[in-house]
Image 1: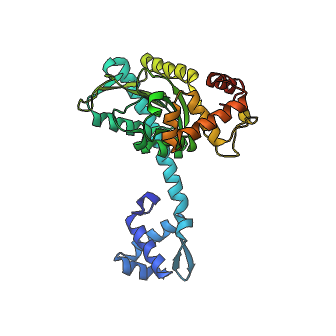
Image 2 (image 1 turned 90 degrees about the horizontal axis):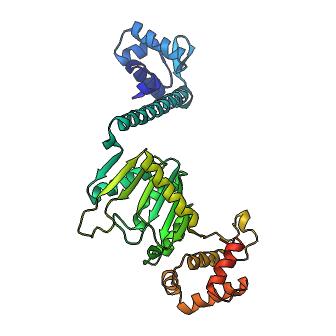
Image 3 (image 1 turned 180 degrees about the vertical axis):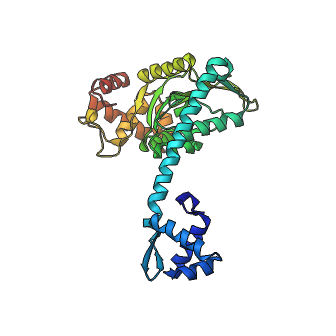
Length: 326
């Protein structure tokens, strides 16, 4: 078990015996281990040279504390494994790039079922290191957004998420709360009236998108996994273009605002309400999603209009953009 720390089988047995006994002499060790005195002496000499045991006098030996004797060895071993893993990943990517150049079929992998698509959605997020970009359209093909536990895990380990929501999706039950929850955990969210395709891009290295947009619930969707190529670059450019024109959805904790919004007079709830309005979510849907009455939502909207000096919701949106409230 301790071979990974550099101990042979005999040395591990001797070390475990010394840990239990506290100290022992050469002959006792040899007898307990069932080996000759010469073999025990060689093992102890190697262990002493490695700093695992120390001589306490009269040919008696005691163990060095495990965290001192073995801890640094394990750290160095782990570093070596990490370096080797990185080298393998680099070689794997070089191999795949070479394979893609020689075989165009490697550029696009076809996923023929909902189960295969779901597994790839899980894998891309679990393996993401830097950034995930998402187009979220209304209606789900693989799973509801609320079931995407992989996003929260990825956000927790520092992966950036940029998500563009289709307006119709924000009107689905529970989605407003779900989006707010994601934003609180670090997601950057924006909204547009409609999106051209469902899509996820992980680390700008692979994109996943259905090939048939309107497959029914009883029909297995067909999807494509697109790897490094001009097609992938085009999909990344499509996302960036949509991101630029999308409306930011804001939900800030009280007292925590960015420098750009330092002069914004709105609190967290007002910012969130404003971002949903500007994204085009109907007041009735906002009321239903937030568990408020329509009259309460309308009263809060009128309050925002008074703060902005606006007579219409269009003027409110224009003022919010000019003053950089969103």
